[in-house]
Image 1 (cartoon, rainbow, N blue to C red):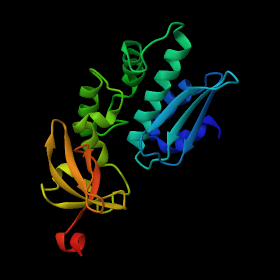
Image 2 (tube, one colour; image 1 turned 90 degrees about the horizontal axis):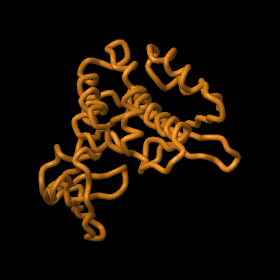
Image 3 (tube, rainbow, N blue to C red; image 1 turned 180 degrees about the vertical axis):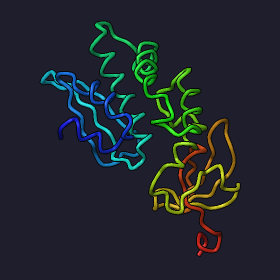
Length: 206
């Protein structure tokens, strides 16, 4: 795909800025089917070019944040000769610097803007680890269906995850919840902001 096609997925008022930073040589952007483990990915290819893949996403704000996140990896890779940590100080500084021109209410809603500004004080490897930011971002998902956050499900209640397996929420262990898969009895750890569908007991046990 042509790099400018990513403009279809981001807020209109970010177009001019994004056009400039995606026009660099040897950079290929691809929008791919949603992956469960990540929103985006940057890698150097054997032919010397650089590729960024981004999950197809109807949430224009999440897509924009992911795009800048991966572009920061690209820029660090281009500007640094030594080996650095993927989300170390070099990436944090670059990501913050690249996000700064976008931090205004012509691009992000005020409520989301405040959470994003707080997140950028010390950005993490994944925006999903910032619970306040995740909650705000999810308000702008266009296909939530019947989903809710796991922290909204009561202990000992049942839920469906990703339209497939059914689990029972047991209790909290540090920052995550222990949940039991009903069919196998196996225990798993879930993020409190996992999107799930509440299931009543009769349906789960029947």
